[in-house]
Length: 286
Image (cartoon, rainbow, N blue to C red; front, side):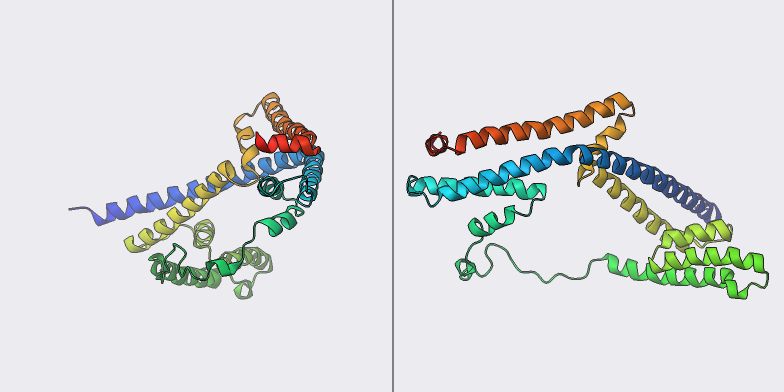
């Protein structure tokens, strides 16, 4: 039979270790995010003129293709091909963030909604989704947050402190307590409790509940790190962090800029091809 005291002590040790891990992970991610932002600003400042040049070339090409749609030189089939090319190029322009692409997409992509009126589900079923199973867990967590907030507020409310110098200290702590409560941050309240109230006895059930929420916080941090690595505007520069040597970082930055320059060259080649009607016809047939 398991010793309940030993079991509780182990859970308390796990609880403390996880609190420490979150603190370390948050510091690491904060430093990482700052470095990524710094590199992003550097790359952005150097790439902006190149991106603008590319956008102008792409916009000119789109306008030129659009003009050809009213030119009797091109047959109906060729004009359909031109429309497909316009949509493809406009999607590329929109992906960069140039709002001028939307006008082309609105003209050629949007379809009449009446085409879909006869399709009740259009291949998709309608479901009535029930509340996710963690709703009960979230409600339990909110009660615990409220209880912990009241306990901390009772201990650190500055109005209950007669000594002026301690009142200022408690005012600062109370601000942190209030901010954590407003954000429904159980981990933040636990951290403040551990820092300012010291260790206290937890029941096994309470430790289990806290560890669940701390695990959830650790999962959030891991998700955030993965997002920095794989998604969004910072993903491109994330790998620079793995190469701490300045010369490697510089090479990576130059490599990213060279990719944009290559896109500009390709766009200029496309412009040469489509600017003449005969060469465009040959391009569409190839």
